[in-house]
Length: 264
Image 1 (cartoon, rainbow, N blue to C red):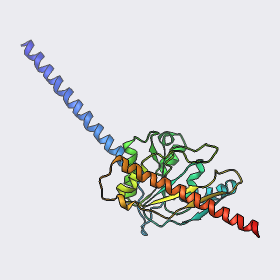
Image 2 (cartoon, rainbow, N blue to C red):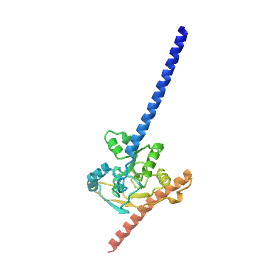
Image 3 (tube, one colour):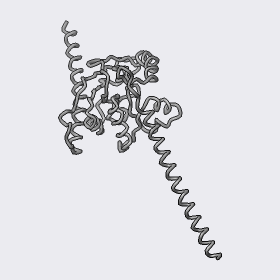
Image 4 (cartoon, rainbow, N blue to C red):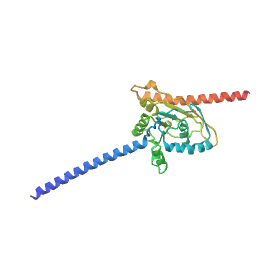
């Protein structure tokens, strides 16, 4: 009788343990789902009645910081200065943290910037970054969530800005750092136009910086095909070549104008 009671007690204990684990698993799933929904809510910005995706906090920062930035780091935009509503990917070389202002000057829509993951967890900057829908990225670019979040943003009709060099360029000769892949893949998979931006000289305090913005370009020759990693790499090389060409053309035009003034 004691053995039978003990067996029943053990069986009941196993049943309760099984129920507890099942409940914990269900609660963990609910938490993960809630976290995904919260991240999605913070990440995506709904369109207004005119179809524009506006970030109010970003517009407040624009009004406050634009004049300060221009006074300290004066700059001049050349080329395609205004970008229309809708999804696009800004691709630019990268010298300093203030480079984020250049794409922001082409539109009053919100722009999702890609930044190193630790920035999102910083005490104050992290809070602001999350409010602005900044997408965290690992240094090696292997974060699948980064790619998925970027694609969600673009498919929602929003703008994304990234620096393919992956870090700030500190080289003295101002040549570009090697471009990391990814920008072309996002553009091709979401059929989104790319807006090339080239910062022609390193920004310096109280010195004019020249920024050339190219016309939006689409990698249509790659659409609707199953691409290899080599073909994606070729598409990324095409984007890098576009930035080099924009800078070379600008420097040639400036040199020609200078020669004309000298001849006069």
